[in-house]
Image (cartoon, rainbow, N blue to C red):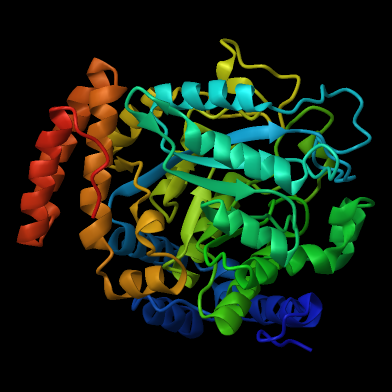
Length: 471
């Protein structure tokens, strides 16, 4: 039976509740009065339930779909303004003992070269990332208790934070590793991580078990309850996601919203981020073999309805998506993107992108500077801000600031100051010219006069060589 306050996976992700919600959505997909009322109510940025969101996703009335997209854009702008946060993944190891059929890291794959970074390797990789301009990383590793124990991950985190190269520094490390114990989550928290990220892949238990035939990840309950253990271990910023295309997208769409409702009901705060990757080509993997793969229009609608349903949750899209696809969904709700990404172990120190250890093919292969220039020219403010993590504005404290709108007093000036750092230290002349113009245009939008004065002073100090100012 469905119980969002339960910590048992099959009770807070109840199969029958999902199926009933999908049936309800199907029955009401042409219910103009209901759908219109949901859209109008959602305009207050209070969100929608999983069942209500399912109705919007299923809506087949063009006029209301357009109204829905317009609302998603309005909510995105109201909460996040023009800011887009930048990060990069850092693959530590592709050793893995799981049997995930959609991932080239799976144990039976004998084609892929197995590799793990040493501490010396990490210093080189992080130096390369700092030379690009990155300040925030997401660490990735396969599940292998022998090659990738928690001690290895902790040492990697320490190594990342230890690198100070020229004006560069990684100010926040997020971690995307396998489900683990409360004790290990405490260790990650003590190591200074920002967000703990774990993709559910699919919430359909039967499909999940078919897609994960063996290995620790095959335990559906242990994997699905990982966020509970992370919260219990003191990590109050968690990031959820599904791999759209593995299972029926409608089912997983409802599932991820139920997971968010569960975390909110039990811990008082939902996921800090939701990622929306789609199945894509990789070594040993062909999306053609997955009949549930979704098209661009469906993908855009998923992003839009998620933004409406969970307005204060950050949304992430990676370089799995093409420039065209990313440009479309940025406007609809995405608040974080990766840039200049390498999805191979040790990829940042290679002049030519290595393919022998990649987890997935990168569609957007532009450099970080090219991505920055594109964002600036498209009307966005690229941000490398990590201030909330470092100031303790996480979990429910972050949400208090976000829901009152006070977060703009921090995020907007912080975005401009970190953008200024990038322009001074890493940008091409063309990108710097565009960026300086954007900063000048954005400064008047800082409405607090004290903050505006301090921000202008800090921008000048950055120009003179000082770094790392934050509100």
